[in-house]
Amino acid sequence: MDRERGEAYIDEEGFKQIIQEDSDSAQNLFLVCEVSDRIVGFSRCEGKLLKRFSHKVEFGVCVLKEFWGHGIGKNLLKETIRWADANDIKKITLNVLETNEKAIALYKDNGFEVEGMLKKDKLLSDGHYYDTVVMGRINGI
Image (cartoon, rainbow, N blue to C red; front, side):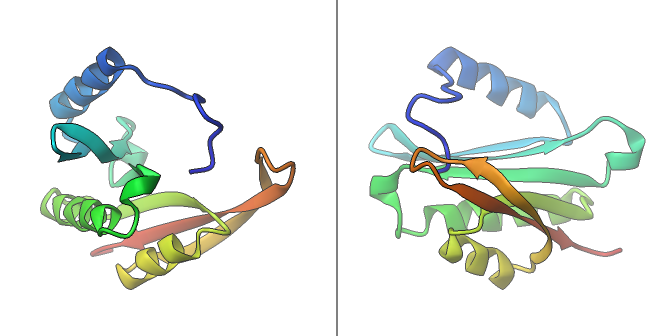
């Protein structure tokens, strides 16, 4: 994760609201991974209502660090791709920190390509600036 502790915190009610809104929208998807009644990961695809953007969604994923390496992010991604393909979504976009080599490899293995780089896009707690890799997966265009 490239956020500071507590940054962009969403409480339980906030999560419930987002999940409800996404459930009511054909352009959005919210997936949750639970282990022993504890949310350990989630992913979200957010589409836009504007017609010119209706063919694509933006993907984001979060997995608790103690659960990295168990395939949770990979499974959330694969389920997202299945959902997008079944719902005629032509493009999935995402942003990933340049240092997250495992995620970049996973995305490439699942049909994503690097579309660009946002230079010195993020200032992290270590005091360094990092690039953001912009990736996309196009299907059926």
